Image 1: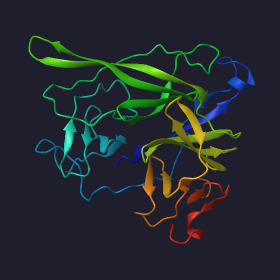
Image 2: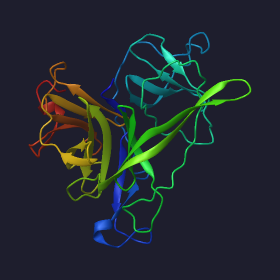
Image 3: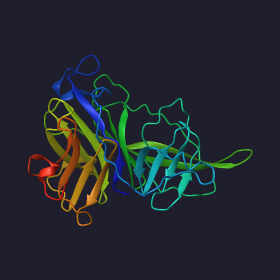
Image 4: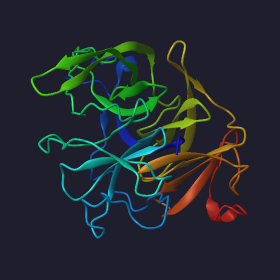
Length: 310
């Protein structure tokens, strides 16, 4: 569970225009439109037979069917009601953490946990916090838009639309006494901003990025498309260097293999699973099949030609 993260983010390169500088070093990115991001395949991972539901409060025929993120052994899940969400613990049957109703007027897109949930006796509540951080990779001084994130060792690591990595930490936690109850109020702050962009090292028109924790490291997978997002031409894996929040391109994963699906990404130890090591498996729309890339080989192959990887 610690090695599963949800959702890939598809982006397209656009040459600088009215929004950003025309300088070639400041070409800008935009999210790929839904019509270009139509996906047939999903990477389905079965955690446990049966279904998750509220104990004695939620009928068994109405399970949690939508999943928005996974970290620290838990899954953020939602049901049919747009205000109901919960934190599931899939390794323990009927175990979950209830959370307050969500404001359905705000789209719920993604969730990650910076720490393990705990029952400290204080009520939980949603806290909205805005940021006026300027995007350094846009010359028009636009506000930074965060599009991808992961929780790791009590901190949030998030990537902006333009590829800037920021580290978000809890800097203040205090008790607030009201007329009825005591509450804990926390504040978060961006403590680090990367000087380099989290983008592929090769030229491309589109790419899809996946965050994943693997063996105590934060990895970023790039599925790179030279023309159509439906065809993957190259694959790159980057490792986050914690000291200076820079990215190191990996040439070898050792005994690890990564699976990048439509809705989630997972890192596995190949000594515990019968599959090839040092590979990235992914779904490709153009070929309507699953393919894999072995780091250092520069070759992408369909899985059915690889013995034992069907």
